[in-house]
Amino acid sequence: MDNNNGIEDLLVLKLAGALSKEEEERLDQLMANDPKVKAAWEELLQSGIAEELDNFNTSHFIAGVKREMARRKQQRAFRSINIMLVAATVTGLGLFIYMLNKPANTQKVLSAGKNIPGKGIYLQTAGGDIVNLSENEQGRTIRAGQAELYNYGDTLKFSAPASETGINRLVVPAGEDYTVQLSDGSTVHLNASSTLEFPFSFSNNERDITFAGEAYLRVATEPNQPFIVHVPNQADIRVLGTEFNINSYDSGKVTVSLVQGSIKLTAGKQEAIVKPGFQAAYTIDKSINTCPFDKDDVLSWLEGRYVFHNVPLREITPILERLYDVRIVIDDPAVAEKPFTGDIMKTNGLSSFLKRIKLTGNADNYTKDDTIHIK
Image 1 (cartoon, rainbow, N blue to C red):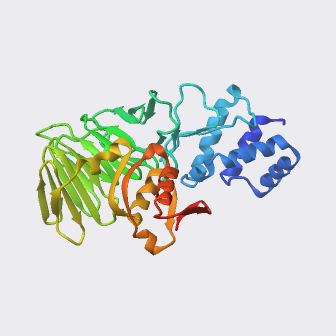
Image 2 (tube, rainbow, N blue to C red):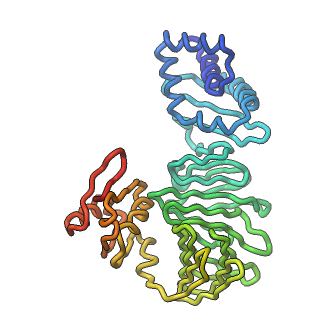
Image 3 (cartoon, rainbow, N blue to C red):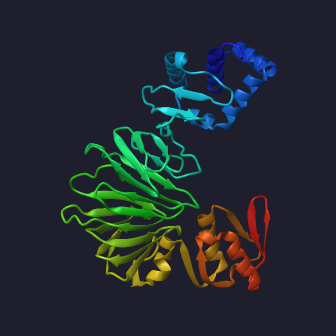
C-alpha cells in the first residue's frame, strides 16, 4: 500500500463525510483492490469514532485533522492493525484522541460531546472532556483541562485550582459501583446506574452536588460551609457533617437513611429533620415520612450484598438488572408477586439467584434475544 499517510488522511476525511464524490469513488475503488486499505477502513468503523464525530463541527474537525497530521507525518508509520487518529484542538471543541494501540504514559480522554458512551464508568468534565475511568490504568494521573485526576482502584481523587468550580458529571452504569473523593475530603460511594454532578473545587459559601441513583456519603465537617445534595423531585438534603445513604432509584421517590450526624430534607414547602437510625422518604405527591431503618438491609449493598424479606420478585428484578447489567422480564403476573426471602451476593452472579428460585419452586427461567425471562 503506497502513500500510507495520504491514504490515512483520506480515510479520516471519508469518515467525516468531507470527501468529494470523485474522491470517495477513487478511495472505494482502492479499498476494493487493496485488502490492507479495506482492513484499515473496517477497523476504523469498528473503533466507535464515528459516533463521536456527530458532535463535531465538521469543517473545524477536518482542519484540525489536516494540521495535526501534517505535524505528525514524519514520526509515525501507518499500519492496518495500528491506527492512530488525532483531531487537533479547535475552537469550541475539546481534544479527541482515539488510539487502538496507545503509547505508554498516555491516558484516554475523549472529546467534548453530548453523548457519553454506554459502557464503562465515565467522567464528563465541565470543560467537555470525557474520561473513561474503567479503561484508564489504576494509579495513573489523568489530565483533564487544569485538573489532575487519580484513579486508585475503585476511587477517583483529584486536584485542581480553586477556579475550577464548573460542574462535572460522573456516570456509573449498571453492573458497576465507584467512589469519588471530593475536594473537601467528603466521599460519595455510588451504586450501579447512578450519576453525580460536582465541581473540582467548591465555592466559599456552600458545597453543592447533584445526585440520582443510590449512594453512601461520608461528609466532612465544615460548620461554615454547608453541604447540600440536590436529588430528584426537587428535593434537597442539607448537612454539616454526617454519614447517610440516598436512594432515588424509584421514580418519584427519594429515601434518605441517616447513620450519624444530622440532616434536613427539604422538598418544596416541606422539610424534615432526620435523626441517626431513621430514614426520611419523600414522594412527589405525598408528604415526607420518617421511620427507623435496618442498617443491615439498607447498607448491605456497600458489601455487595442485598437482603430481602418477603419481597415480591417484581421488586427484585430491577435491582438485578442494575446489579448485572441485564434485561429481565417476568412472563407470568402471578410469578411476579411471589415473595423471596434471603440474601443475594453480587459476586455469586445472577445464575446463583436463578437457581435458588428454581429449586424453591418459585419460578423457572429461560433466555431469549438477550433477555432473561422468569416464568
